[in-house]
Length: 188
Length: 188
DNA sequence: ATTTAATCTTGACAGTGATAAGATTGCGTG
DNA sequence: CACGCAATCTTATCACTGTCAAGATTAAAT
Image: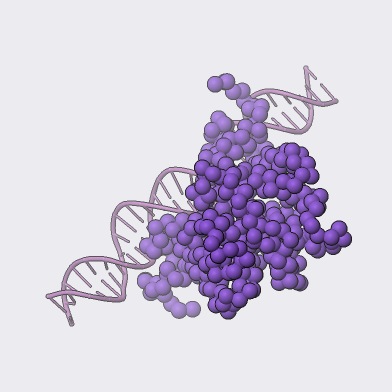
């Protein structure tokens, strides 16, 4: 459409968007910097002015997706306040996100699992657990609440992976099924 | 060592073993058929007499690992019989396996999550859940027990992924911590 | 012993990530 | 406004990858 000048002007952004779309449609495996460059009408070496290497590029896209994902979780947390459905709804949002974008799951957690200790989505769960009156006495030590958080996140994240498998969960009654499964679990 | 003849004699097997070792040490990412061929003292095209393509080879190694993994789970199941610790011990075995071989996790679940509906490790969990008196009435419908199984597997599998992150779980008291976390979860 | 099929080598091809050297140009400083 | 710096892009190239076709070698079956 727009006749390009020598300088693209917006290459970094465009590469990331194209990369995102590519991952969504075809998965990371076959993504190549060269194809991406070409699809942006730019030479094969141009991307390396904006990204140190492919790994660096993928990390950037990864962070971009993670931000969107975090945004969704935050909104859910806000919507639920400290209500009794907070944890359940967080879990549902989590699982639904990856159920809708299965390739994202592979992309995010395949290339080196992020260290949950400073992984925002995990943080959100962590603080949600803390605000929850879980029935346990108020004086619960750090180890206990840590175990709870890890346990909760494990269920949700594991279920998200299942949701990634085509046909593993009934797409007709997805939300109900997720809710049923998550409700089958009680965190001490 | 042994001067080779024109025919290697055991190439398929050796490739798989070398591949396994490579994945264990360096991860799948940088594995190449050519390097593997060379390390077996064979030309770069030789492997294709035994495997249709790289994907086919990786699948074979994947299945090989999965078999070992299943074997461990089965032994655990046998050891526990229908005792009250069956589910807990199965979970521990599951998590410990990947805690000891973190690269295996990435390798197995990165390249397309296996369909749990015919995935042996999942089956083992599934039948373990069924033999367990979970407190619920005997007449529990299929949906319920399905939800339970999925929930249980989710926790365990999710936790296994966490165990994959270096330093996320305390390696000094690994078993205790796993047990504590799994015990924090009650499947309805 | 002769054929057949499995296995391996050689030599190629296209595609990949990456880098160095140089072309182009936007932008801030004088 | 002119100049020059630094960012950005191109061209050319490198080493490496998966894979295939054609032919060499040999084990196994007949």
